[in-house]
Image (cartoon, rainbow, N blue to C red; front, side):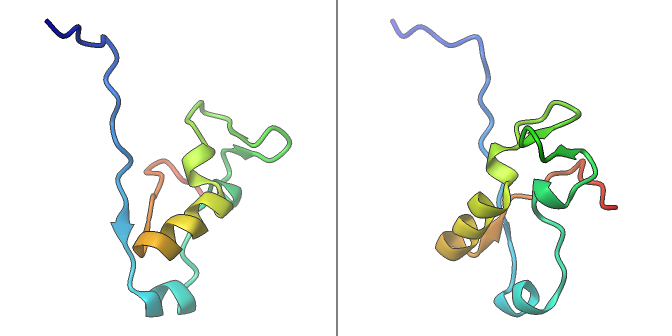
Length: 77
């Protein structure tokens, strides 16, 4: 019998972005652009995992899939 993990792991939701929009619009999509981002520690001040939303990771996701992972709690300055 398989033992089930007590932790639920949600997959990251990636949203498709049209290439023209990606090139021409200022899309807020990285932790680096958010008020809640602590650049000294590369972390989110409200406790979310910033690893998947950092600029380098986001750009790689876009190059591979044409999609970005938006943080639903992003606040811009």
